[in-house]
Image (cartoon, rainbow, N blue to C red):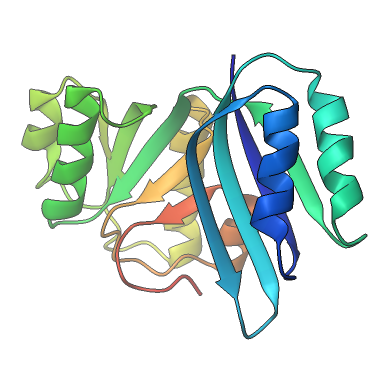
Length: 190
């Protein structure tokens, strides 16, 4: 079985060594490991993809015992994610995702593409993906988001991916999908 381990904890020396020792003791193989330290907030983040069989709760408890009481530790089965992509006019972000999806490189199923223009519909048709256009002219931001929400209800997903989606999302929209919006363009969410 493949699992993913996610950790967020105050940073301290030796965390990687201690955590990977426990993973080894549970006879798991690490397939991929990423770490990051937020120096400003003294936080350590780790995400490990692992393979093998073990009692997840025991592993989680053993790792948690090494860490600060404020630590967050999650272990869950690795599975393909369901995503809906929001885009606007430019094709480079969407095109990259579609090519990776088509080649099997993207560990996700694209359920639909939503845009406020029709320009990218022919690109989506080449990949046999549902394309929904919700024009934003003549609509308030709230009315437009309401229509986007209706589409998202039709295509329940694990994540919403903003692929050069050039609209500012309201705080209410963002809060509704907290932790489930991925912005792959270099702009910021409000």
